[in-house]
Length: 574
Image 1 (tube, helix red, strand yellow):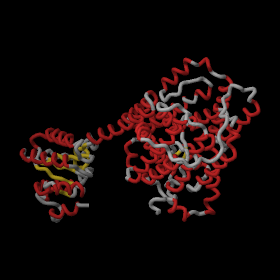
Image 2: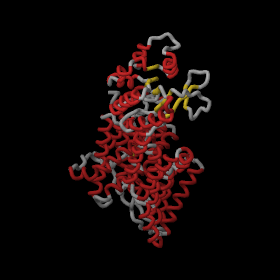
Image 3: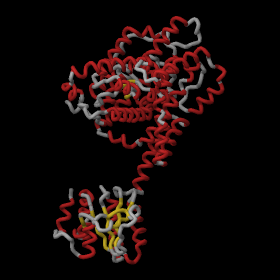
Image 4: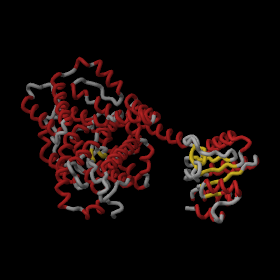
């Protein structure tokens, strides 16, 4: 059972004396922060505020049971909330029963996708979105999330959109409609939060501004009649209700569900890895994290939760507060349960401008401009990939930005593997070491020998490139060339296309009187060469443990060491 339910692995090792106090403090702190965030993020998603608190409840319990990170805090998050709004606002009007039904069904579909990916051990998909793409998307989404709060922050009826130009155009055309009372409340909120952040105070900023906002409007609502407030929030815990599932609805929300499933997984893995410590009883497992997220969203949807995942900000709060294990989530849940049962009437006078300020300040940390600067100095292609993803997300939309990012990641992967680094090697004087002639000026190069190192797996996408480079380098050697030595140290695999190409090249150079040797061949590659008949065709004596042995044998017909060449095939099969 430990294989499927990670809590069974670490809970028996739980040290009450060392961990309980820290987990209680950390869990309560996260729960307090989660209250205003949950309400705010529900508004981003186009849902009634109570659904943010519902989403903060059961998903935490599921992650406590099935998650592998000891410090990740889960629940509603800003980015996923915006994606929810972008995906289903075209299908139903925000806040309506139809909209709520779609949001809950979306959570169920996201969970099913994540669970299937986890059971299928497909956690490796995290590798198909590069860091520049994730950084560009996150920064753009943060800007879109933040600027969508201008409506609540200023009172200007800005159109709700996930395209920056549409929001700015709407803002400029209606700038005269700004409500000074709402704007003052919003600016005061942002100022307080930024001051707490810059002074690195331990005061829970979101909770402070919520309390001040409620008290301010409760006592002075007659002086601030234009400031919009949350009004009634229903009390009580969510009841069980299976999501309404129809083929038509599932088909309509499937693209956004797949997007949320992947993005939620990437967020959770990146946060979990960042907070992982060597002392943790359980280490992050991508496949188990997918299962945990799937269980969160499936069972959460049965209790009125919309899609949830790991939170950047609350995980950081969890870490800063000193939480030791995932047990802290239990105390976060107790805070939410208390609010749902007893405290929701007190949120009647909470200004929406305060929630807008909380959202805008919380997403600032997602704008990763430092990564763009670093990539500009380090790798221009990665920089432009970040910019393309960022621009696509900001100007075309969330879904479009993700698609651009995925396409760019896969394109870059194919481009880099289809034309990998290739080196011509020469001997460092007075040694048996061979290095790239373009990086070492004084290496010795034999005019009769071409030593070529291909630094990648050889497969259908780069087999022709391999052959072309080999032909180009052989022509540069001219008529003196007698031996081509293929250093396979960096080749960890070959496919059938590569095998066919190698076989053809051997015949091609044999007709020209040029021998082909292999060195440093790894076991899996040698197995393919053996099965294809290339080893028998060349003879096992043409395969060497290192470049020096190959060159020595070519020059003298024997090795410096008294070893049997026929054993080389077996020795390298590891």
